[in-house]
Image 1 (cartoon, rainbow, N blue to C red):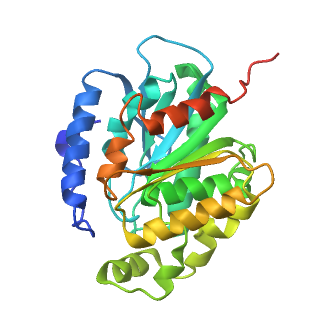
Image 2: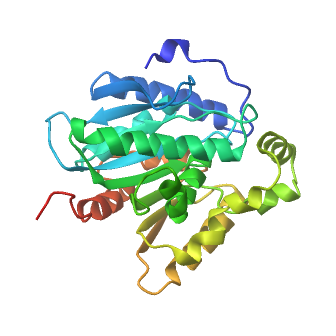
Length: 290
């Protein structure tokens, strides 16, 4: 996990994204300096197929685990962007796993999703050696990473096809996620055109919104008070769909700030997001025999 020689990536699409990326790396560098980490664990052979583990200072066992995916419009980003989220999760206590994945346009959406499943499979198979409970795995992510997390959580057949238990994901924490990709069928901005060209056709099957009514697990959904208008609208509609299911376990929060600063606020230990995450993670049943 060397922040000094990360591969160069193309310019970011959205205003404010470059400043956010700089702040995220600076905050992650500080976290790495004071947290127990196990960096650059490969779940595949490509450079991008790696995870970083962030562990509580005191070795513990049977901890819940949050696998977290970075944003960047599926075309950009590093797992190192998300390390600054670790302290809020470690304090619960839980283990934080930041995962990278191959980026469009070198791959398309199906391969990106495959990478996320592979990162989950690696974590499920190896996290017990680091004090985590493979029966208490959750997923989350910011922006495009939140989309990927929600998709994995709502389509259990993807995990089952990879040899994982269909119910391997026990909760989901998407933040400022694009949850309906129909907007890419008729792109309305240069950024939308670039995303559609990079990701390829047939994106409707990768929209979490299509599967929200059948949600079987707890969700905590967050978005920014001044987020992108489309993001606000989609997240509000997504929460309504989740909450309409009998027995639904869904919570949500509107976080002060924009698409980027709202996510940074979620990293505050003891803040509203970490309290909500703590309530869900602490109530997950352990995989230990009773």
